[in-house]
Image 1 (spheres, rainbow over the protein chains, first blue to last red):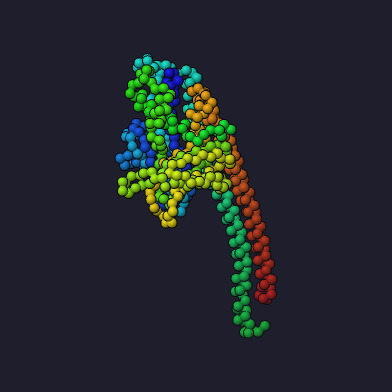
Image 2 (tube, rainbow over the protein chains, first blue to last red):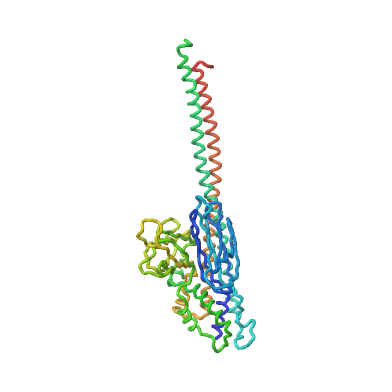
Length: 213
Length: 250
């Protein structure tokens, strides 16, 4: 009996998390749909991790096509909402404003954190007021803490990825431009001399007969 | 490691999510201790619940959709999808046996590690051997040459690391109690965190290497370009001086 009671708080406060990283081409809109029940706290978090100016449009619609959230050209944002009706929720990412930058977008939809208390805490009847043992509640607390750790790790990973991509892009850009500049210097140097010589050659040929030296 | 043993199911997250939903229902209907469902009844509930209610999106028959997963090495990634085709007559999405998906998975070195055709409902599992970004691309097996075609609805769920474990199977195989199973799950979670931290270390090394390379490049190219400028300038002066003297202009 106590085992199943113990299982309940684990299930009750567990958060279902859907996270995905996908590629979005230019002028493209990508929509995701999820069926959600009523009275659920959901959190949508997204971040652009590569491409162009690292910005994207995002909007979220309720089952009644009501606009819950709409932001344009954001690099990172979090949106909390408590669902007022059950049904199909849609959230879309749009790269339509971009002409040639395809982007990689990461999003994380957290469903859960319902306000249900674990049994044994705030119960009217004492029939199933079996308190969780220390061990069980510790295990649960550790689980929740680790979930937070994973969350922070993920954020760190994304930020590091963005920084690293910029650094690598800078590295190749420096190389390419330097090679280009060197070639240009040499080309211009020889070109200048050549043009100058050409300027003096023709008149000398023309004047050849007149000067008579 | 431990990950390699376990099966293909992705129950852990699904179980929690679905049982969470049903827990709401049971708890709010004022359940007394005598009517509390046992563990077996929870699993029967699982059978009753919809088989697959994950995130879904739409795509055309000729499209290719790619997802990226940046993971450390020796990590299990499990993906499950379901494809439905839009039928214009009924204006609904229905599952057709003929419409399948080609799943193409590339490792960070752009080498293909999985390339298979699946039917309209499929599942793929693989363990990464190199840390980095893995590309999971889904493309419907279409015979069309032009863009467009039928509109498809794809339900997709990708689980990474310890979320890809089948804890029900582990419990049955190793005969663990609830607490032991929970501890096992915590151990796996911690192992995953450790792997990620280690991977983070290698990424920062790469970042540092890139920054140092840029620094070196900027320095040496600046030196090289300055010396080329000086050399070329000197050559120009010498050459033109000789040229003008030959032309008897100086």
